[in-house]
Length: 256
Image 1 (cartoon, rainbow, N blue to C red):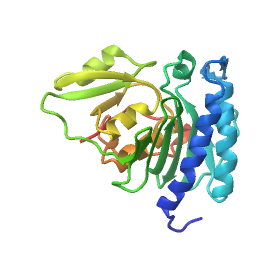
Image 2: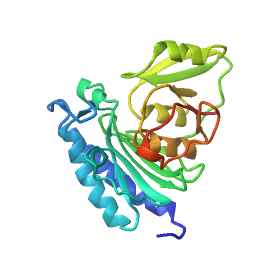
Image 3: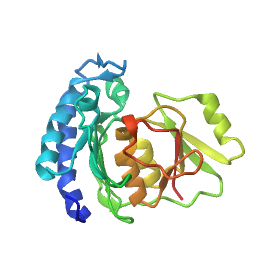
Image 4: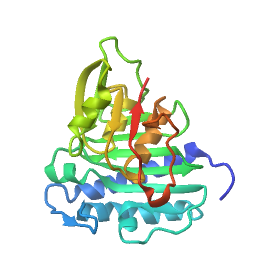
């Protein structure tokens, strides 16, 4: 599939897949224990249940587009050749949040084209939220109040609201990065929800000064991009996907 995609139609097809995966993960919420993967990170039955829904559905929907998923990659099952267009899937981002019961875990599906996340869906099943976006200006959130458009905000006069990891982070490095900036508040959040908080105008800056993988942030990046925000390397360069090993450099996500 080398031609132009109808991203809006594709987004409409992918959203229910991610939401179904979220419902599958919730069946294990509060009753499952973690196992340890080869890299020492935790994995649960919920991760696998969500992936078992997402991967067959994407491969049926777009059989020509390869799928890279966290759990398959951890087992050495990722395709060797991905080309210019591929799916990035994290069936359950924020396993520590899932196990702690704070609700801040997400299901993530993103489409990458020429290194750019052009479509993303982030489902927060325990909070009843779905974030989605493709073309600029198309970002939405759906929750108990209905569905509405979202966009980044201009930085308030009182200063930045900085969002950071609830489970990972280097406080000294964060303090050094923020030196000289006017910071009004710091908000801790789990998983790709941090990117969505910027997309919906509730935060302004997310510096990530630790290890992440591409599937951790691609869907949230796509939503943020559709809401008018961006992700850059710490040096200010374009943040690209499809890197060797799918490992990310440090980055900063910003709103207005």
